[in-house]
Length: 559
Image (cartoon, rainbow, N blue to C red):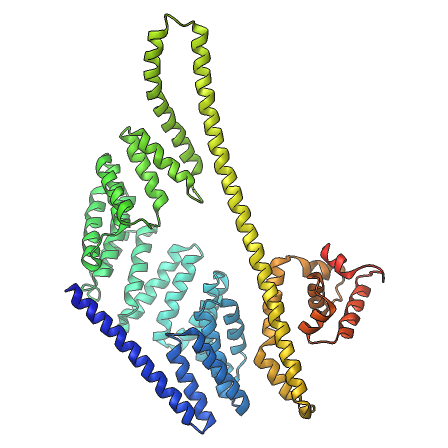
């Protein structure tokens, strides 16, 4: 049966790949044969939709070709559609800053301003981009604006998705109870429209929130979800609800019911994926430990450790294993797990673990000392009492010295790791700024070459504007300012405090001067002559009240 499923899966993938290749080839042939350039823009749009699921780079190249053709035809609709698709491309590729720039520009389109529903869809995209950037206040603001418009227009299908996005955003802001209200509305909306594709994720969110929230009678709410006829045949959803029921009972000190629902959930997960869930095994081990059966708990914990080496709660698992071995007085094994915890990064309860480790070592030392005491008793007649005291003191001093050395070694290793990370981050930021210098200088060189080749078009300024827009120079400038300000925080603010009359162009010239670029390099990046750069620097020195002998570069590097 498994072989048959693999064959079916392979055939499905193969057929999808063949269908993609055929569709792409057909569109490429149609684009090549199409003489009407306006219709060709629409074909580029279709080709982009095919590439976006398989090849992001080719999808973007197609958008560039669509943009260039629309500009050549002066076709506003084609330009707007290309602009909208670029914004979504940046969103899909997790470049939220660029996506936000395009979404904000999209709001200025006449067609968007004229339609409330279209404007609401842009608000929804802005909310998702801010959510991706983890700026949840801004995300909630735009999603709520979209919600208000769609609620008024009663476009329910889109409203379901926005309610779900609002629930996720509010939960990320730390308000679990408020997010429940949004998820419940999205749940009712999807039930009404029989949205089987998105319904399971909503139920999973609600089940988790019911289990962890302080709402009244979460057990009844979970069972109500479980008994919904829409999900009775969905084993994955039922397994998740059982898991959350078990978690609820476990937190409420009802290990019997918790174990019952965890076992049900585990049975369904094994049916679905032919393997147990590490979270469930971990929870069953915790229940056994709570009942005092630490041997059974260790069996569950070791199953997780052996079968799921990449378990995301490994630190908690090591802590539980150490406690279980400690309770069984197997101090060597407990000590080993406590030490493993200390070597892991970002330990949340370091103080408690170190205290437990010290206690485990004291107990282990106590056992060793008992045998030493027996030997000392045999030798007591031959040794003087002061020598015995000195020997004990030396033993304790050695133990203390070893512990101090161990802690010092751990501290030094963490400090070295921090230094390496900080150095790597600094190098990455400098590399980004360097790449922007090179990119802008290369683009400006291209512009100069194009201008020299098109001297006969000197009177056509629109041509130059189109070239600059196509190369997106201003967009690069905005991203350069973002990275520069991230590397040199407060630089622009300090300059403005000293000389409020500095313009944006002055600030840009100051940033390049601070980077100690030569006059020629600066001129190439700003697309100016060397004399214009000299004049600009002279003007800035006057605004900063610097004498002719003082170096502007040295002055800026002291800020």
